[in-house]
Picture (cartoon, rainbow, N blue to C red):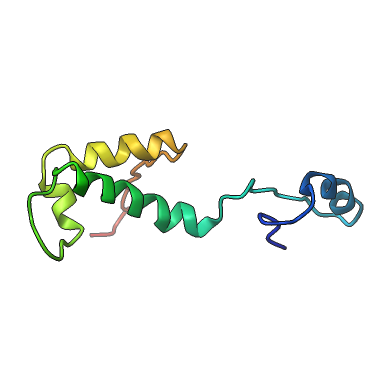
Length: 98
């Protein structure tokens, strides 16, 4: 696998070459996985802080997001605008397990 997110040329023409070699070109259109996993969250929480939704000063642990009314819902809404949708799945315990 090769990251072609920041390829100087149009990377979409690489799909034919990838198919010829039993592969697929996955073009990310300039948004790296790091931007999605940490950058989006950082920008969303920065906006939460700037709006004064978290009243604490100094270092704020992530638990404040869940403890402050509306913060977690705001986070989920902002993720949705970026096409990130979170879903909780609780697996059932296998028979005989405690």
